[in-house]
Length: 332
Image (cartoon, rainbow, N blue to C red; front, side, top):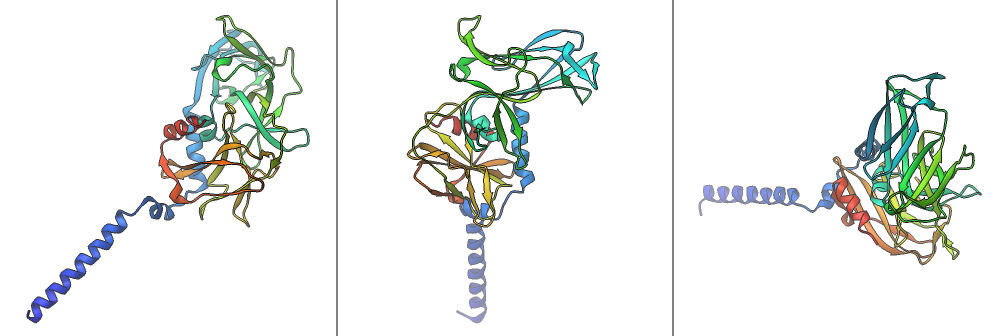
């Protein structure tokens, strides 16, 4: 082979080698691609907000309409008296906008970050079992209205499960963005919640409350055995601002716990109260954002004392909001 042919052969080999490297890089597994993408806190919050907006229902009532009953997509009836609504102490006339959200299952709780963690008398947080989470607000031309009397919700109990031990909780968002629930103690009128036979023969929760915002029909998860603290490690680059760790208790109905603290020094998530039952069969869930979608991993575990559960990118999958909700709701 002459010199010219040798040079051409070498050049062709180099080109083919370079092409092979490029092709391999473009078709590498999802793991290497994801290592180059770490979501911002803004991106993660955006998909949560989008999920909340997807579940938000809106109604309009007239300021002169008096007692009005609104019916939600799931058949919850909301009784609200327009005569009790005021703006800066004055009665409201014309159209009033009502914003309403209802959350009944673990999948919806996860994508909206509206978990079920209730405050114990000593201030610790523990799992509560939900009969429904509700957000109600009223505005006039974008201005916040005040409520001067009690509202009423009639909640079909078959949306969760009938339970006479349910009580009413108020939700507040803490400085870390966690929605924490505290049992209602300052009720007005009939205040609280009770279970009765509904007009159609099924059982219905009747809930009475006198403020806008988040309200929950819940009870504490009852477990008398040994409890522990658990930790969770997430992939490099992920933290409390751009990811979250949740805990699904298998067989315990509509509830979702959250590991609500993060240690930047160790890179570990924790619930830090030591309230997780030892021996509990559950699923621990890592969730984050990836280019407008959800990246998540769902891992079955049986809780052992002081366990540390580790997630890798290779364990995760990318899917839509609907796919993640369906995956969580399919858990036992």
